[in-house]
Length: 282
Length: 282
Image (cartoon, rainbow over all chains, first blue to last red; front, side, top):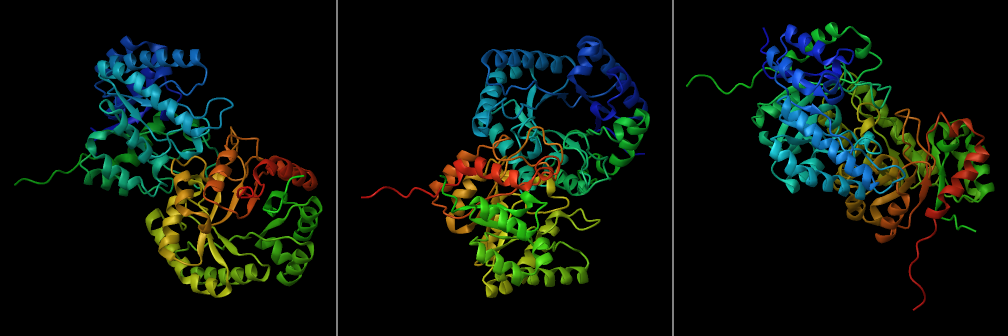
């Protein structure tokens, strides 16, 4: 039997399940944790969801995601900050130690990526005291460079790590092999981050060919990412945190029965999610 | 009238034109240079092509591209090296100062990106003496990270610049805004490279949304890349080399009449391709 105590399924992986169905489904299969998405959570309400998750005995590695803050319009920007405060509260209510930050790319009509990045830094600095107060970390997730135009202007692990250093306590990294595997500096970044800066580590795979920029991620094992290698690096740096599968797949896994997707997620991730060996008896 | 003396059109932009048609078409529109592709060149033969290009008065910034060298099978690898020597000769024959290096990503079945990168370095080191002898530089082109799995494991400007430093004389960079615009280190890389390391600079645009990973690049001005900014950086570092439009667009520009594509390429690039101002009279 695989020890699944570190293993979580991010609920977007089983997109057709409601939050209650995902909670029941993952628990039934022995998965220990659930990565929660805000729209599924809102459909149920934080109070009911928190109780259900607790009763099922699941841990919550993260709440996905922040509302986009990269807006040039001032009033839209303030509205986004308020929405993010609400999401920070929601994360706290369900026991999620972090809110995954996906801040948006360029604003409409904008071409200045540097200023977009500066705006994101300002927004995070503004939100941070509130997040600290709530005990919810801001989990910066570097998104693949192909999303720089629209989804996120945070695109490399090193960039996010630098930003964490600037922002300070209450920030960390959510790393996903899908977004970072190509990066010649990813391994050095993980080693530089150390275990305390990594809030959750996402598993996924890169398909060759990839047929869609957004929703064609591969099941662990079906692509070209050397996941065993990253697990080894995480062990090297003594990372003991969550290992969470997250798949966007409108052409394949989202078409399948969620039971099947859950079962296969466990099978495929099992070799990579065991607790870290900390040495035998002395 | 715009001075087009630095401006080249990479012939893949007008994919439906043969090489002779592209030579005639570009010359007719006042374009000064043509980026040549090996398959179009082979269809005509280097001797006839060289004569035609010379008679038309065009310069050739580069020959595209190297044959993939990232092959685990030894005999396929040797065949690829031989093919690359042939392409180096072809570049020399048409007066192209560089062969654009696109080395392939992972080999079939491979997951080790580090060893793929090491193999590419070995292959380039092997080819380099031949290229030096022929007077053709190896133009390392960082390709967008979304191509790391299949097309190229050279994915950032900094990575390619480091590789040039390792390989030494006879190597340089071919930079394309499409591949590099998202990179927080791109500007620093250009400044570190300096003008002598940049062999050609490609213009293109990133569409939002991008609907295809390979062949949905945008016409200059239709996307989100701040091309004026990169032109300013190139001026800052005193880069005087080619400025070359290169568009892969099966859904749009490849469907259009090549005359129209050429005309609009010139219109759109005109603001960015003027000769560098080197100061007024003393």
